[in-house]
Length: 372
View 1 (tube, rainbow, N blue to C red):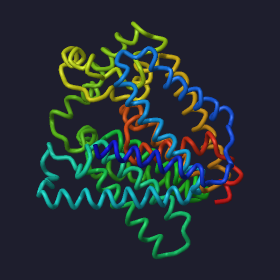
View 2: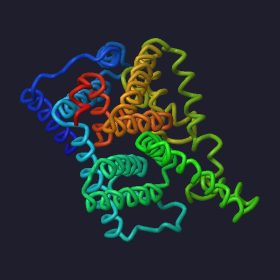
View 3: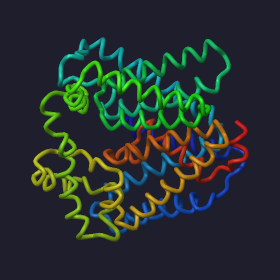
View 4: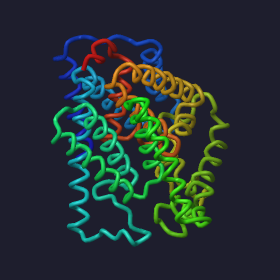
């Protein structure tokens, strides 16, 4: 009930904000055309869904998120969106850590413990990753030394908590996005320094550790999650058997799929769990989820939209510092979607920010946004 009430309030906020905001919308081709077509295809999937009411709940959820995201993109500047992300994700991280302290559950040496606090560990990894990206951007653009130092400390805290979640994809996506951000925001001299620093650090580690560096790298792939996690690295923690089973089902309905975000539903859950040997809560890939839910047509629409948006984000990042943040978020989002599906379908704050960034590129004029 709390989630439903939150979604309804979010929808009311979006509608009210759209009505109160100056009309500066436009359909940026091809991003705007692709997102409109994709959302129309999501809605039409109700007609072929294997579980209409289940699909309807998912469609209503994603539409409410998009309405609120569009209103936020229209109302706030890029810097204000980054501030919003930093505040909410930062408060969430502090509350989550405080909750772990209250419950006396913090055990970094325990392979089975992963920092979560308030969410699932993967969702907490997204929260910490988004906090790191927004903190890095705000530390770069602010001129106040105290605020700059505070944002750098927040960045360090976010990365430490991200490591404690032991979420490998969230960590890899955040590191890749941060590397892109620093490379785009730095001068040529600083870029050379960053690259040389990474090379020097790698050489120093090899000199200190020697041939054991391979063993340490192998251990690092588990982020301290123990031998069981190390043994499951080869099949991506059970994802490969799941995806193999998913593609068998996709071949039965290749064009339209089973309904938006509906394949893992009560009608299929028991059968899929029986075949893969574990109980999946999602398909664990945003791209494969698009194939199963919307067919290869929906998959092409989604990937085309993400590719064109990412390309435009990188082009604008070369001209405007503010777009470095949005481009970094796009890299973070696209990378996470390889192994996680819920980041653009389920109602979390991280989903809301990701959709806000997508809405900005699809419907906002770049001239006005570039001045903020």
